[in-house]
Image (tube, rainbow, N blue to C red; front, side, top):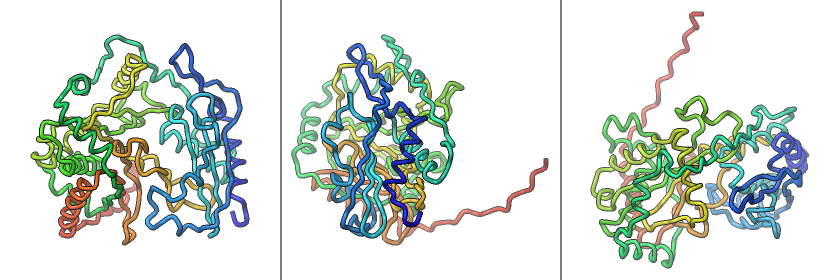
Length: 419
């Protein structure tokens, strides 16, 4: 790729990728007052190229959001950011003075989730590298997750509905909401490497050590000690939403097909009072996270779509005790190769999921620590005093992790096939 202009190369490949992915070149319309439909107009997407007088070192080490000058790396073209009647995609390639470049992408989330965007960008990357067509062909099939407009969906989320439908300790809820909304919030990133994760696992009973995933262990620890740090009323109901993708799960034969690039995730919720979360062992939180995730199958997905239909027109509720985690490492943006090798960073551009409500959602991001160890970085936003308490809890975990001995997995020689 020596001497080639990344903006020109990526733009050409993007144009080719939009042929099989032609809905991305259309516009979103509203049908019958509420149903969203894609009008395949072929109007195209936005593409911006730019030059910066700084090198990669300007963006920090390690490379984690929030990035400086983000509004210049993904320029908000006037009139382009509406949900309806606007381009679905905005691409910007910024050439750096060091010879590297940044590819930033903005997508209308109604059209695709993170893994769907990765699939599309993977197609662009393959075409850059000389492929004649994408190796994974796009599948539309949005009818798989159409709401059935049932009055009683099979899996109404009774527990969550009960919490949201009651005025549970309104004074406590109000006080936490005010402290999160109006106090000076601080942003800090927490690194979970092999030692930190092993130190968390060491606190779990044997059955949970085998069953809990890396996400379960990190999410359970964050949920518990974030609650400890916030110090809410003991009767406050704390909720952790976990973003779960239905692709590849143990679903029926009518599950999500390979190539589907629409939204295929739900956010099941683990629920506990603050008292139970803070006083029970860490395994209590990890177990609740694991159970919340494992209830997701295709029927759960369709039930969630039914619920959206039933609640159309209602504003979403964000109770004071609500927090959500999304594992952005599973989208594997850092594996995309546009011809110059794998990126030094690939993932979310924002440190938090919803900038206007920074305390609501955090991402798990692939990262490295100062020693070059691979791990997961979790940026979080909290009021100053709560952040200080969470940093102290992280210090305790680091002291525990110093005593952890990491065992290298045994590698066994492959056996010859008996066929």
